[in-house]
Picture 1: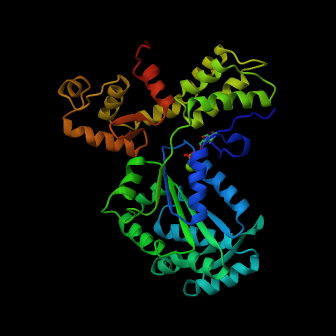
Picture 2: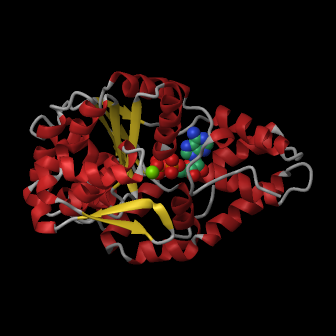
Picture 3: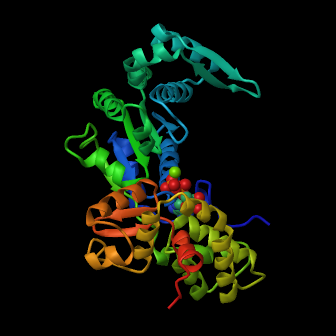
Length: 380
Ligand SMILES: Nc1ncnc2c1ncn2[C@@H]1O[C@H](COP(=O)(O)OP(=O)(O)O)[C@@H](O)[C@H]1O
Ligand SMILES: [Mg+2]
């Protein structure tokens, strides 16, 4: 039987829940050509939300075309231009032959090699000369606007995992270049989304940074407990199984409403259920989940410095005055000047998420694993 829960893939259709306000706001931005920056830790639902909204907008507005660009495995500026050019061409040309003509017309100077995927002739890739590509960056960056103008539609370019451009060779110069082109575009708007709150905030909210005030900035929250309770019950009942409120709530609570983990734990609980989900099934599923990830968590922990590990311990113990002499001594954290370095490094590794004065673990299961199996802290 197909399971009614999904994780590690985009949540769409009946798997997508909540986010009513965020959907409205994003739809409105898309339709009116407002740039959006969307930020949240990994696996909270950014990609799912953007895809869902894109589907709605495309349904209702035939004049709007939407491109998806994922910079997750893009390693350099040149590669970034290449994926933009490819995706824009793919989305804006209806016929295959057209791509060749368009490439010639809009990118004459850097005429790309056009190749077709062997197993799918509908898939076209444009290959570029890398040196030429960088020299002609402006041409590529204005390509979407030129095409949209000429073909008379609006284009929305969604760039996922945008935080990754910080790892390119000259991130600041690139950001300046992008901003200077993108802000002149009339028919093209941009939706830039990614994790690493710290880095994204720096890029978008520092007055000295090129992307300052580029558009509407949205922080995606987790999905509320009440919503999960109803969602889990609904998904169970669709497969003729049952879960009561209490157990449903426990699932959400154990993983602190983390969207990916709620779905995963719900699935593990569902698999352990014949007709009505028992409390013991949820708890068992949870223990299994923590152990399943053990190897991964060992590797993460091994890659941290002693002080970083000590810092995580202090967090788990609920210490709030992290820079105080008592805490610094107790956990061997060095000097108080160290603390901001530690925070920055751990936020950059996406192990913690810093929201104002609050520091949270991005992965609630990692926190539990550290507590149980690494620091062996007794549960209270
Ligand atoms: N609106 C939603 N409704 C239900 N589940 C969701 C929703 N958003 C996210 N999820 C769950 O979280 C997982 C990660 O979502 P994703 O959109 O990939 O997050 P992100 O892009 O922020 O990393 C999904 O696979 C799904 O299990
Ligand atoms: Mg994503």
